[in-house]
Length: 44
Image (cartoon, rainbow, N blue to C red; front, side, top):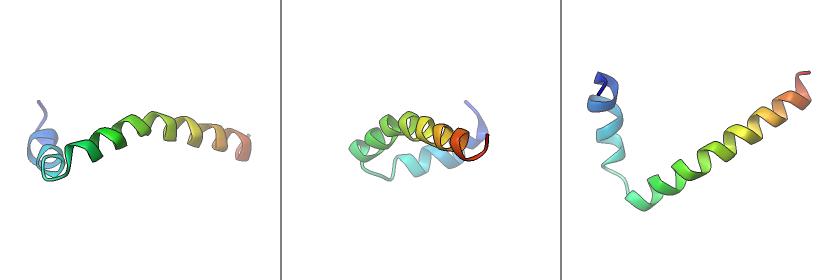
């Protein structure tokens, strides 16, 4: 495991509600797809 994950990311994630983190993680690919589609239309 990387230093960043062990000392920064993991402590932040484990202080939050597991269901909320799961939902955000599941929505992240959709957000990335949407952002790339918008960028493709705006910045040809």
